Image 1 (cartoon, one colour):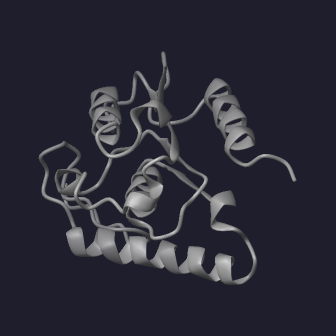
Image 2: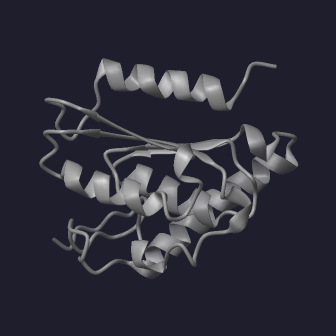
Image 3: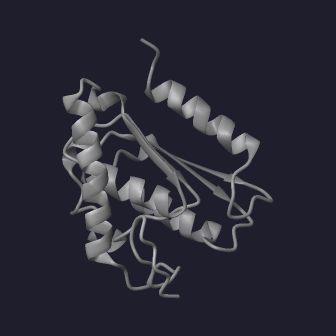
Length: 164
């Protein structure tokens, strides 16, 4: 499909075996890691930072958090996949071995089929503590979100970032 995605990284295809823009993925992850570093230097504890996103943003959130040197609070991945999945679990930084992950996916998603979400969830369970990976699907939801999904995100955020 060779879609140019200047915000994050280029997509060569949307299948588990499609070639990947490794340099672009790592460059985008480094950009997010520099934002995390900036926030930590400004007094935000890393264990109160959650990375999250939808589709490509969710994919980048998974990759970045799993390779980050800071112990983060959690990851929210909506309708996404794990980029460079073949490099894991070796590519993972051990500091986030117990990170909580909420992965949500619409069962009717034509862009990123729910099967890719399921494969990602299984891969994540080989990278982090399997009991910390929560995969939820939503019937009838396409490549979008739903109110029920957003409530799951809200509940997850309240759990991993307790009020102070």
